Structures are given as structure tokens and as C-alpha cells.
Image (cartoon, rainbow, N blue to C red; front, top):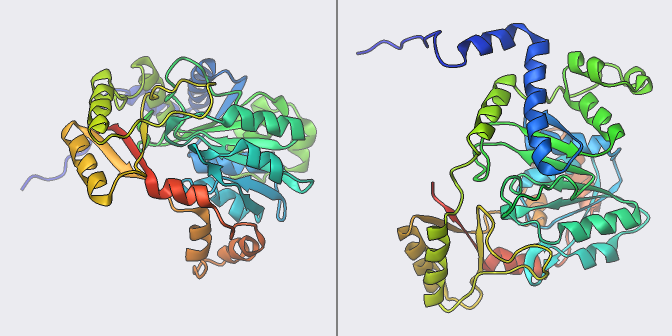
Length: 372
């Protein structure tokens, strides 16, 4: 039997890593270099890296001044961590149904439900599609409402070179290895354009060494000294990120032959690829996903379609996310003491409402992506 061997000290990057572990200033500069390269492609003025998209969303809500009882509008379907920071802060959550023609929050419905109590809107770019987000951002600007975009699946998935840094007041990215558009293993980033917001995000998320070297707002430092979450990105992830950028990112993109295979396959089932309901963005697939409405197919036909796509090296699955209404009811008796805050306030929130189009898309949507 072979004994476990210690890792060789001569591995690639070993000298750099040793320097980073012993030099806070050098590690911070490397992380800032990574941030700058991301910002330069996304149309934002700044970016602050964090250890996860969830941490970034929590920091964004704290920077926006969200507190217990504030009304926050959220989508009815997403990864649970889209909602969790707002739940945890005790916000009064209000869901808005999806567009009947496309699985994104309806901008028209958002406009109708915004009131004097509304402090923020959290939108999400699921499966890499930005459709409707510009309209939502315009509504928030018009109404003076803070807009936070969960762009965990949107970053680096656009079909052209346009960035996403101007689609919200704060845009939160994910670099998790589970993302098919840009996996680094871990981490995320908050993008923005307001200097005040940058100082707040830095204060909430970074090591004191960086906080004191970058924040010039003396009042912010004095009034909140010592209270932050230290959500900073591991500098080694920053090194990996720089390496990924130099290699043009992900290999999980849909290739032309993938797209042609999908279009030929669904033609046999007499269904069509979904196209956005407006023309602000292309109807062609983005780099990572194609969406199909299976409403006209039987369950057997859907299963056969998934098998046919699998033979072509494509991954097809139903919408994997539960409705937020189901999440709040399902988790009503968890053992964590802090969960009481979540449940008590969600009971007051306007979550338990009829969401016909969210249920429609949950049942009928098929997401297709590359298996690579």
C-alpha cells in the first residue's frame, strides 16, 4: 500500500502563493488586479471581490441600508440564496409574478406593486438571460428604489461583448465551480458605479488592512469601527481568476453544432426555442443555455426529448428551483435559533399569494446546456 505523499513544494505558483501568505499588501494587490480586469469588461466603475455570491448579496443589502421590516421585492423562482440574505435581515418580502411570455419578473407588475414602503428590488438573470432587467432598472431609477441584481448565472454568458455593470445599482457575480459560464472554484464580486456604495461594500466585506488603505470616508470608519463580516476573496482564487481570464474563461459554452442539434431535435417534436418578448436583446441563444417551453408535450414526449438531447451531448433538465412560497412554508420548523427571525417575518411578508405564471414556468420550462 502506498503511503500518502506530501505535496511537492515545487508546484506551479508555489513561490507566488508563499509570498501571498506572508504579504497582506501583495495578496490584496493581486485581488485588486483581478477585480480591475473583470470591471473593464462589464461596464461598471468598480468591483469588490467576495468569497461567494451569497456574501455579495448580503453585503449589497447592508450597503443599501435594508433593515427589519423594509419591503423588498423578490422574484418567485431562483436559487434560495437569492432570497436568504433578505430573509435573514428580516425584510418584508413581496413576490412579483413572472412574465407570461418569458421566465423573468414582469417589469409591469413591479411598477404596479411598488409603494412608499418599498426600499429595494432584487432581480435575477437566470440561465444567462438579461431580458427585462434594463426595464426593471429604469423603473427603480424612476421610483427611487434601490436595485440589486443577482447575476450569478448572467456573468460571461452574454451572446456578445456587452457588460452587465449598468443593469442595477449593485450587480453581484458568482465564480463558483457550479456555474457553467465562469467557474473558478469559489468566490464572487460586487460591481457598482457609486463611490459611496463602494466604500460601504469594502467596509462590510474586506480585511481592515484594505479598508483603511482605500476608504477615505472618516465618518464611516469611526461610526462603524470593527463591525464587518470579512467576506473577502481568498487571494489564491484571485490568481486562478487571472489565469482563467488569460485563457478566455469557460469551456462550457454551447458550440454552433450544439445549437444546430437542439434546433433539429426540437423540430421533430414540433416545438420552438423560446425568444424574449422584447427586442432589446437577441433572440438567439446566449453562450450557456437554450430555453424550451414544453407546454404542448406529454410527459412521455418530454422524457424522450431529454433522452434525444442527451445523445447529442447536451444536458436538459426541468427548472430545478422551488417557488419561494414553497421554501418559506417547507422550512417553518428548522432548529436554528436565528431562523425564528426569518419565519416570523416571512409570515408577515406578501409571499403566500397566487403566482400563476411562476407555477406555469416551473412546470413547463426545459433548460438545455452543454455537458462539457
